[in-house]
Every structure is written in structure tokens, then in C-alpha cells.
Image (cartoon, rainbow, N blue to C red; front, side):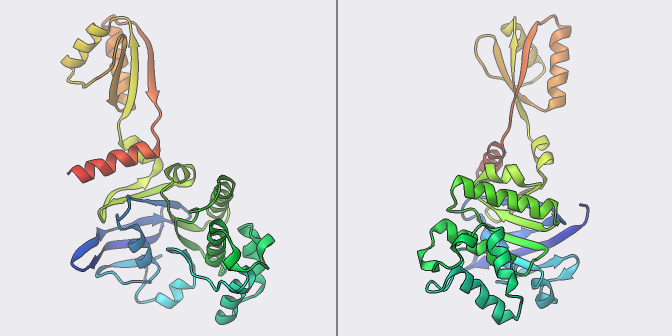
Length: 303
């Protein structure tokens, strides 16, 4: 997946003199699930609205497979499915009728309606009026809308909001299938970081409208320090060794906690053994996406 499906170059958007998105450059690989993360008010939804042409950036460019969105808007949007903000429906119509109405307006196949309702597991409620739908059912219907034209690109803003654990599991597996089997490119935002961690191949993380990290999930973990707990026979002697090596540490009794890369941990273990220290255990604490996210966003806020 070396080729990018979507590229933005320094897109910026201001509202009332306030910069909401600031010189943001995204590189979204073809066939990836790109988790788009940031605190509330970071500029995620504004960015996603620009990606689908709902609003124009004040400056910068947005390209799909090299084609400029503003210059080729109609052709590009035919190949994009989106779920932005809370979708609006005709509440007095059924789920099926809402989807059918859109297909008729676009002169598209009505058969697609049954297909997408089945895909999002909403076919059981196809004849139920939308005003009687739960929030989770409305979310599923919004996802069905985004799949109607069988697009190569999906832009999804909080698609699992309001779903129960089973519904989240089903949508996650659906998105993984669409990416891995059908090679669709999916940009998805969510406040459920564990959910993004379980399906995303790439991450874009913004704070206050600025990019603070972009790349693969694997590289994100490798770019931040791990926490290791070292259990030794001579903690005071080890602390002195760490001080001499200018390595920060914490911990109590015979357990010492340090933050370093995997290679540095291996080197430290070798140093301790060569100094005659008995290392009973060297344990790596598993990092989560939430840990990394909080660390990076806090650093940015404090800067």
C-alpha cells in the first residue's frame, strides 16, 4: 500500500478568525483503515467535511489518486461514501423507503437498497419507520447510505456511536472486511480508541488543528518509549548504575521502572548482567493506543 488514495497539502480552515484546521497534510494509503483521532474540538469533523467537499478549505489542496477535488468534484464524489455528523432522515418513511428515495433521485439501482441493509444488519427493520429507530439503528442506516454506491472510499465520522458492544463488533468486522477483501480505503474517526486500535492500519492524530502524528500503528508504538519493570537482587546498586548512565527511573523495593526503547532495554540488561547484577525479571508494560494518544496530546497542549 505505497500509493496514497487521499493526499491533502496544508489545508487550513478558519471560522471567525479562529484557525480550526492548520496547514494539515494527510497521506492516506490505498486500502488502509486510517484512524483519524483527536480530542473534542481538534478539527476532525471539519477536516472530514473538507475531504468530502461539504466545505472548502481556505487554502491548500485535496487530491484523490492525484485528482484535485475542487477541479474534479463530481467525478471524485461518485466514488466516495460518507457518514458525517448525525445523518438526517425522513422520519415518517421506513428505512427501506429512505434509501430507495435516494436511489431514485440518483437514478441508481433499487436492488442496492436490500444489499446494503443486509450488509449493516438492518434488513430486519427495513419496513419500520425511522422515527421508531433507536440511535444505534439510525447509525446503521447512516452507514447503509454510505455504502449505496459501492464506493472505493469511505469517510466515516463516529460510525459506531450509540451501538451496543455486539453492534460495534459487527461494524468493526465489516470495515475490516471492506478494507482487506474489497480493498476499500476507509477513514474513520472515533472516541473509542480501543476500537480504532483493533482495526486501523494507519493513524492520523491531530490536536488544536495541527498534525501531531501520522503513520502506521506499528511505527507509532515504536516511536514512543516503552515502560519496563526490572526486578533485581541489588536495587540500590542498580539505581547508582542508572544515575551514572543518566537514565531516569522510579519504583520501590527491588523493582525499578524505566522508560526506554526496546533496544535500550536490551542494552541495559546486558550492562547490569556484566556488572554482576542478578536480573530476575525484565517486563515490558504493553502500551495501548490510549496511552500513546494521551501522552502525545498532553505534550502538545503543554507546549
